[in-house]
Image (cartoon, rainbow, N blue to C red; front, top):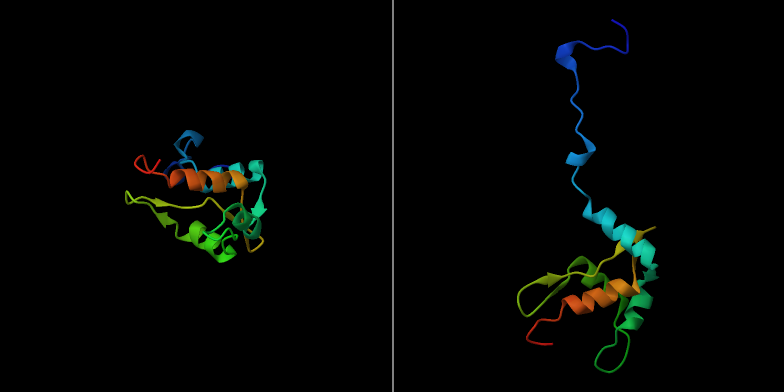
Length: 107
């Protein structure tokens, strides 16, 4: 038997590309790269606390990792990626994060 042939019983069934599940992580990476990445420090400067100071960069990390529970019970996470060991997001992702926290009652 030549190396390019195989017995009928050992044939491998290939899955068509249409059966491949889309990778949501790849979608987030593509979107954030297209929007332009910013550091957690830059993201923190976009949001201020009650005294008008930028929130902590650790807070940005918590929002990306753990998210925030909204009044209606949903958990909203900041879209972010790790690049070279650093957490990166985009200004647009911060905007979406804030918008997704709003409930119909509070708006």
